[in-house]
Image 1 (cartoon, rainbow, N blue to C red):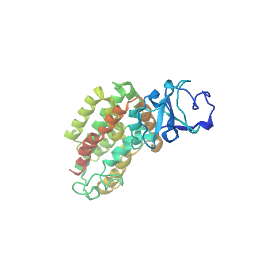
Image 2: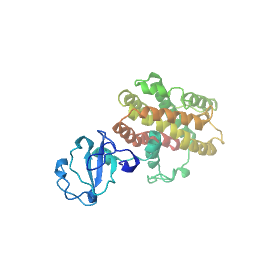
Image 3: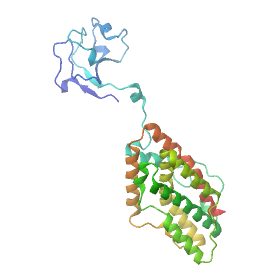
Length: 305
């Protein structure tokens, strides 16, 4: 919006013109209500041929001279900051004021089902999550495929084909090593550990390709994978443990240090990286959210296979 400053609050720059000019700047205009302009004013001098009702006459300071013939009924004028058409029409994205991570969170929450989050907008397909019955075999498939995805993410960040990926090394959110411990525990209990299945293999392959050519889209998957596990993922883990693991808490759901602080540190890094993106690049990142949900959802459903 334009910033309007009463003339009386500042010293005039030109005092001998038929009107008073507050400040001269190439990015500002002098705005005068049409209701205060007299019939004798030579508006043509400023390219104005018609006086619309209830509007300001905005004159670039670059066109104002000492000889300008513009008679104003009263000396009360306002100064407005000139804005481009694009700036006037630009919209504020949900969460934008708090940083780009809040924009990603807002989009992600909308893609939850209504039984998963109060902000969710997706209709529940099939049985609600609370009524699903997990199996040990299915849960092992989920853990194996999850480990493959985290292995891939952590290797990409370590390799850093784009420099900004290096910001996300050693965040404390890494899950590959703890998943290895959990799978070893299952092995010791006499369970056969399966090979990665199609959902995990497909997602890992997609992440590898994406990371080499599309950093904004890759960051979207990075954010949703780690942050979803720290929230809804933990809730699912507790429910599964209650039903098939005698309430055992796996290492997958434990973090060294204060999880809320670890998450905040990564939020700060994500916001910092996104500061260098254009609005189009940010939107491209947000648009990738639905795809990340489809990949992760396919892996999640393995629990109940």
